[in-house]
Length: 284
Image 1 (cartoon, one colour):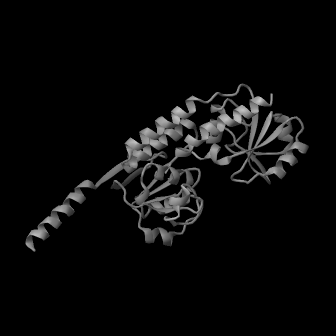
Image 2 (cartoon, helix red, strand yellow):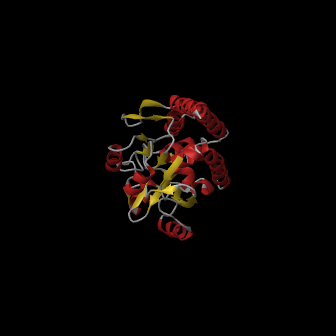
Image 3 (cartoon, one colour):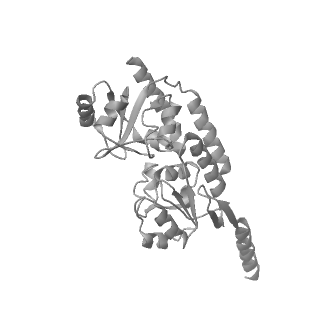
């Protein structure tokens, strides 16, 4: 019996040695202190959740938002903690995470600050293609999956290296109706439009997601009006509406996930963009 107890203590000590306290600065400049590697992760952003699973953290993700729908099968086993703008603190407390991963644009600052009073919260900030790759690398460092993160970045860069960008095609990318809102500068969407060679007609409009009018669209005179499937679910009926409303600009439904989900989803985005570019090129 004494021999068994000694073995048990030795094993526990070995487990504790594998854990350490880590200090790291997140994308907003906040110093985050947490147990490394984290064993109970709550993710508050769909793109981040998808990426964390792709990094092999399936067994360590204990909470996600209702909008975290990828990977479809795996997220079914993860507790929902509310939405991206409003979470259920009682569920968070039940889960007792050792790390919460949030996103500056997706999650309100007040919510993050409230959570940070009780739990370590690491906040990412993605406004461009380059930011997205940095985010993947940083998540690898934060979670102890640096090798998988490096491989993911390499795969994404390889996928985008085959992209044949457009030249001089002017587009307006709409994300919302009533009021109409477009993707402006300093957004991940804008960065991908540029990566595809498109000219964003609202890149100089005030704000990252400027409100625009029908007259603004007519004045901007884009070659194409991209109607995103999210956050507002533009559909075929809207295509007809814009066709009649804005003469000279062709409305096209586009997959919002491909343009706005960063992280591992970028591997799917590159071939989607090439198909879109090929289709547009064939219409000239």
